[in-house]
Image (tube, rainbow, N blue to C red; front, side, top):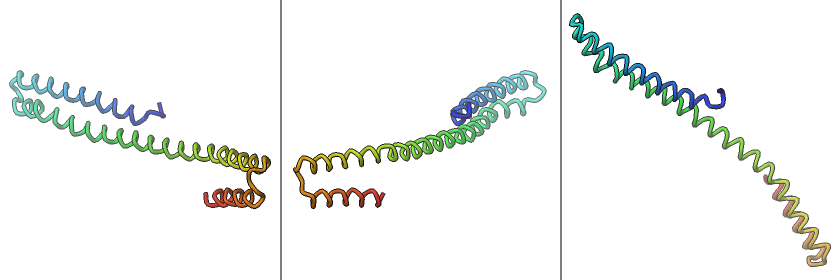
Amino acid sequence: MRNNIGRIIKIIAAALFATEAFASFVIGIVLITGREMDGLGALLLFIGPVAAAALNLLLYGYGEIIEKLCAIERNTRGDEVKSEAKKPVADKKRINQIESLHAQGLITEEEYQQLVSKNNAKENEQ
């Protein structure tokens, strides 16, 4: 329930709107047909659903904000975890390739030292 609070608030907002709009419409009709409070019935009949819609927009908007903030949090935390998880694997792979080339004699000791120092400099920048 706590994981989808934004969605739950939006569902509650829609349910409240439907309930409030229907209730104000029905009560407005009852008051008009009772002939005791025609003015109040007409007011409730027309203004009730509009007021319900305005309140629904506020509550629905609040739910939308919470949903977006949760999505932003998931995306930012996910990127941190992904980048941290991939970084050591990519660095190890690159170092292994450099060492393999050096072991095979395809690069000189000087080139090997330069590549390793460049790799270490990249790690220090990040």
